[in-house]
Length: 248
Image (tube, rainbow, N blue to C red):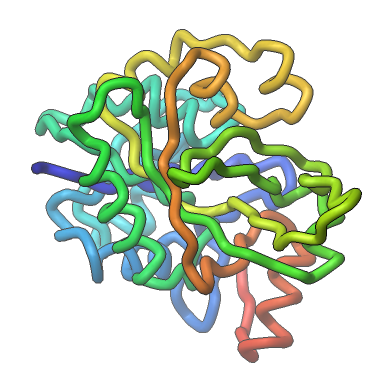
């Protein structure tokens, strides 16, 4: 079963302009993410989708495959859905890993692929992913990190920026999702035509598009995913925690 990795890398990020080329300890954020993914997926099957020739020219000696895309997309998944067919080789699954994940554990990537292989040939499943559990109130209250509800088969029922469940009567562990996802080729093709409906618009969450259209996402629990780098605060977090030296 052929699976590739796609790393969407938007240069003109609103919250952190030039993000893919920010240097963390002498390597760009994008290259560090690429190296983590290459521990699981062969480099010949990793593709960086970017809106910037500057990214390509800076890293073409270190990254094998680039796809230049228009600048118009708001999310990395939109960039992938509208441009993955530019990749000449055909794959059953497309592992999407944002360039925001320079420290993503390889176990999270391997588990995502493992979950995908379980559902790859099952109808009505669109994708597979992983999640973590938390008791950290700052994460639970954060609107940046979606909280998820799963059924007994570990299918995602709903994702919300609000704390769910309410824990009104029974206290249960919160599960959060902010990691990689592996999508069937046919589901990724459909996704570019899915519109934001009430739920996906309300939560501003693109994975709810699958659920709103009757498709399933399989998940499983992993110990750690790692914090994304979305803004300056995330850079400061890693600077303090890992003594990361940051340069532009």
